[in-house]
Amino acid sequence: MAAQNSQTHFQDFLPVMANKLGGDGLIDELCNGFNLLKDSEKGVITFDSLKRNSALLGLQGLSDEDLRSMLEEGDFDGDGALNQLEFCVLMFRLSPELMEGSKLWLEQVLQQELRDYL
Image 1 (spheres, helix red, strand yellow):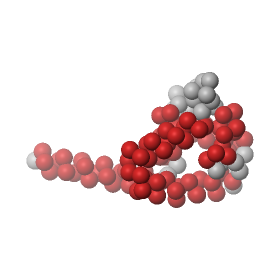
Image 2 (cartoon, one colour; image 1 turned 90 degrees about the horizontal axis):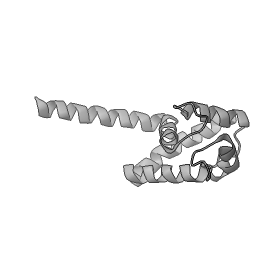
Image 3 (cartoon, helix red, strand yellow; image 1 turned 60 degrees about the vertical axis):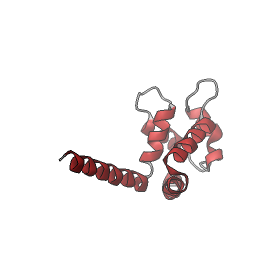
Image 4 (cartoon, helix red, strand yellow; image 1 turned 45 degrees about the vertical axis):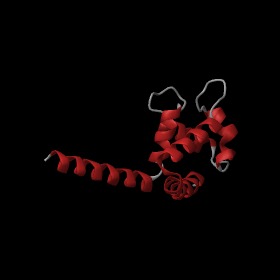
């Protein structure tokens, strides 16, 4: 239940950040978030580094199970940790509103390219 509440709060916040900061600013902030959560020796987010640093991003209420689920959700290469790209992709995936905006933007660009081609 705690994960759902935190996720709902996050979903409301990421689109606001995107609107305020723009694309490059949002990526910079996601990179800053990654740097706060990563294990400084390994250069990736591990379960231990996520648990140790999660309060910095307001995730202190998440259980160990929630934190492990978060890692598993974003771990595309199966190494048990999140690299910077995996972390950024996970943050976008956790924000349906931002993902929907990205889909609409992509559709508009593709339609414009098609019109220019024809």
